[in-house]
Image (cartoon, rainbow, N blue to C red; front, side, top):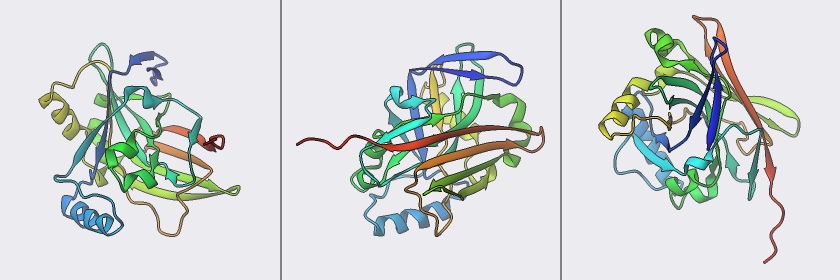
Length: 227
């Protein structure tokens, strides 16, 4: 899968995705993460043996899509950041939404990550330009249900393990190479908001440099199967 990102300078960077990886249970405070793991276990979601986790995903699922087809009504997005290794070795930072099959998740998180695309934005920044204030960056997501939009996620990068953590992990595993995309893991959803939505919208904002990256997509049911 080939992706194209526009940098603030106007430069376009094309990346052929070779490795797509999803971080999981990636909160900055791992004691809180372990409590969340226990909560999910009560709902039937298998507990990981270690945290944070990293799940390989089929590279073709890295998409800059505006429509996500789904097989049933129990799927949802997750706002995240992503790092992308370009062909010249530069590391890009962008916005992503990991669309996940919640019914399949109880049978295997890695399976659920491979059931729908990881939607990435079409704009990106150089990671080197924001690393000195990385924790100030924010992630926000909204869902639309029956024509009404509501905020469902809101956090700063300080709530998640930083990109530098994952850069080290990729380097240790010989994955810090052209075509690798790693998506960060997500933050908690606000209570009372229906995640099984008709559409998702997300923003990555840099308040220090006064700029943002956005994405949005519709969630569309597939045709009814025969058989």
